[in-house]
Length: 163
Image 1 (spheres, rainbow, N blue to C red):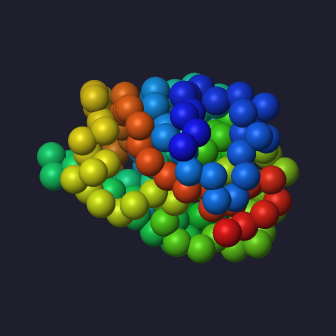
Image 2: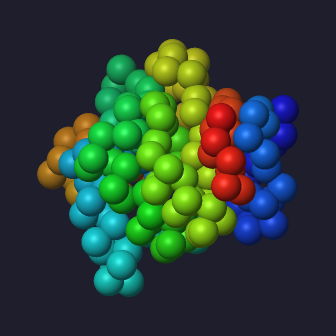
Image 3: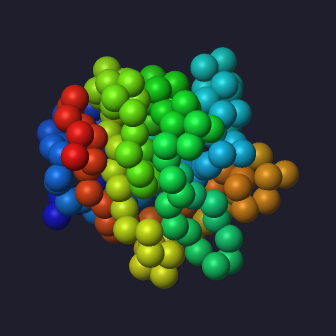
């Protein structure tokens, strides 16, 4: 297992390969269908509510029941990956197969896609702190900042290759 702490550098991303097992610690953000398009638009306008440079975003909602990844290839989510990568996001965490076009944009922006077990109890236990940081009106789909320790994942897309 390779240990990764956010913010992650371009050199660290470039060293990862498809199939690498990783543990992510540090700060990460959450988002899914309701807020990722809004976040991508704000990031493109240089008005992001948070600094995305070197960050990880998990495609999930946050509730008292916990966190677990949602399907990343939904149009509202997958369409934001290129813009968010271009604006600093290095790790996109979710589940499902992404298109070649999205994989190519990850490669172009030196970002990766990581799949993680959809096991809410396991992942929730890794969250040390959570705080709503944007889009509060979206409820559990709002954007949260998480302090995490050892979120497990497998690199599914990196450096132009896909699992």
